[in-house]
Image: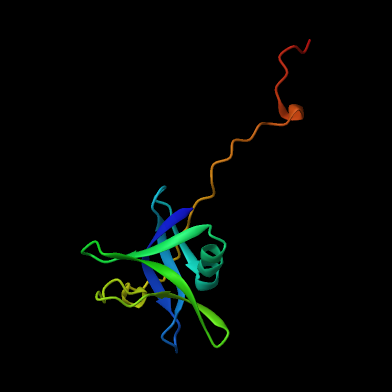
Length: 118
């Protein structure tokens, strides 16, 4: 299971709710931005785990909760306020561009140079 460190969040304009998160894969260092729905899908499918870490190193896991039929991301209240998901800085307006993974491609035989032409 991948572990992503959340580095920023984007809040809904009217409601005190997360719309998207910016995160870093702790294994590869790849940055990405995910919608709240995509992060929820990955957590529920057990594809990924998301954590929030404050500047003192205290971390907590992000969980999925539901209210009035709507799922949302949450960190459980503890004695630290700084590890709260809503306490994370706002993501910049600049989208994070993650390059696609490298895939070597073999040229088609019809495109190869033939050296034994006479």
